[in-house]
Length: 625
Image (cartoon, rainbow, N blue to C red):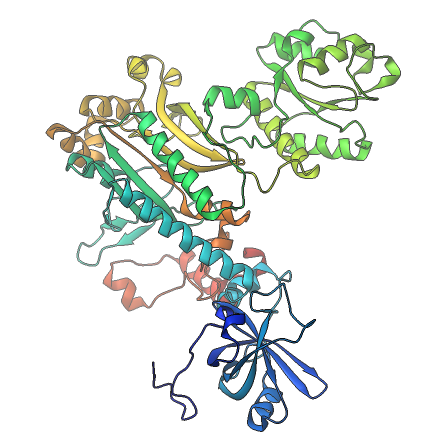
């Protein structure tokens, strides 16, 4: 197909993708276009690796192809060029099995430079460590790299599969508003001032939660949306100020219906992406069981290291640190690390510091020497700072309670459940990383259910919703909303994989009376409830069906399959940890005229902050990434 490319030398910019050529194309005349990935000069011959979105191909330029050879002598990495030539089979012994196009090369007869390129601030043609701020500042160059191209294609593959899956299951995709009402949903809203309504603000959606529930009232039984969401919160590896989730809602369902859908979807994704081992069915664990066994509601179950209660063994011990904790209502808990009896004292001191950073006053460790069961231990077989308080048999009993044997290490923390859970969770993850216990090619999915509905906010001195305020309590717990909110269980559930929350959902409240009771528990008066959620309460008057849903994080899902720890690696243009865009400089100041249009006047503190930001490179330094 002929195109007007702006150059007399070419009528067609490309006939094939660089990575599409194979042995069966040998003898064909082709036109390629792309970036010079690498240039090599070998004794009179010039070799170019040419790259486009389909991959790489080797181009060979002979001196007798004079114009092409002259052009090839001048090009550099990242020049954009067009190559015309013949596909030829490589000589025996010169094939490159590492490249899909490695059995052929293109003998160039013409090379046209479509655009020159300055030397990039970092190598594009190889995976090297680059300062994060530099990568984000030049993200369009970073995205040229093979790893990032692979991640973008994987994201497309996952998204396409999701849409096909949801369509086949009878769901319809419905777009919901981006400009909405500011309501409390956990994080801070991003606010948008209204020009035509002075002093009034829209809020960007933290999720389409209320809209999708209203769609259930509207009779849309099966809804989904690949939704953009916005939360003004502190960032880390699995959070961004704007992110994408698969938003799903279903009418006339119970919890098991939603979990079944999520399980089928993720099993399908595992098969679609390939390369991983995964369970054929996803285990179900209650929140209480997760906290007891792993110290967290998002456990990584690829390795053992399960936590055990040792309180009964130390209740009457001479070691007063343990005995006093148990007497005061706390617990002593620990876990065994297989084969870790050889950890050095320096390593044990480092683990103790990890425990202290997590809030513990210290850490007790026990090392069992030798091999085999813990029967018949002698004092010389054990190393521990509490040896004088326990006999070898007592310490063996602690080890056996945690499933330990000779050659293992025992780590023990004492205190209230919230403290020991946090400390032992951090230690589990630290030990697993140090000892490389987590198989990167294994996906351990599981569902966590029966979350507490409310938690006490010490700062605000009130109850707050653990998931969100539209989550239905267990029917048998509704009576506890006024008398004992902390005992109320919510019909909520999370999909967890390899220590990350991948999806979260719940069966929703569809009764106006129950919704009002929950709002009262959260400290809202009837007037406040009507002002903030009157549209929902009114909709419940008109026949709201039982409904529930789930919202998998698309960014986290793609990062999981890509083997990336940070979701920024699977987002084309992410923000920094301070929600800055190093590429464009956003957020930035606007003109006084623009502010006046939306009826905003900056105070002195804001003006000074903007002035200080303007002195930086796009308002951020390298540490900001």
